[in-house]
Image (cartoon, rainbow, N blue to C red; front, side):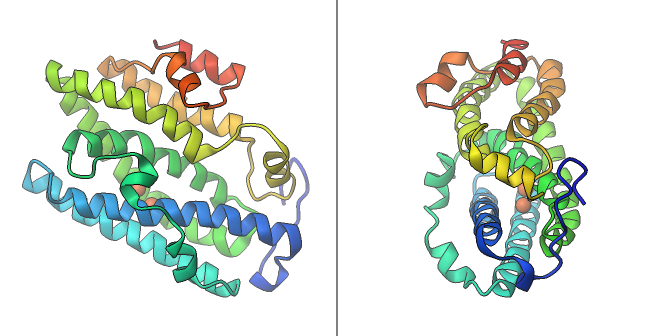
Length: 252
Ligand SMILES: [Fe+2]
Ligand SMILES: [Fe+2]
């Protein structure tokens, strides 16, 4: 049960109906797009990774992202949806994440920034009122801890070389606003309220975004990485609420 709303637990696909089912499918599709596109990013990055160790890790992460995708395929099938059809509508991975898939710095920034945004959403889904989905997310989150650990390690590595680090910062300035806009969606509005009301998420988007940024902030301070200027968010129309602005402004 959701403490805030007393939303009932939905235990089977057959019980998911009407507006609830529709919203569930929208959220699952968003995760499915992210998992499948990220599998492709890591798969492709085997080619541009600078060391054997990084190549092996990229291959491992690609396999894990594919496994996360396969879990969602099963969930779609249980709901009577064809995962191939859902997948066919996803934009190409490079376009979906605005990335150069053959550039190692792009991959490193992606790993620190974009992949973790997905994990923060999955933390919400792990506690979702749709039990079949929630049950699948524990092992996904364990893998994601490993991906983020590597993202942080890469950040530290780049921070040791001022020229490469300047490029890391430049790409981060582009990628973070896009991530906030695309991975989390609008921080306010009826969809958000509905998700919390029916327990598909446990926290409003504003809190999830702030949790994501605050987690990053510790590593950023350690490595002297700054948040992008507020103008970078305004430029692409990412909606930033006052509490999020405060976090962003604390490390400019
Ligand atoms: Fe994943
Ligand atoms: Fe990941």
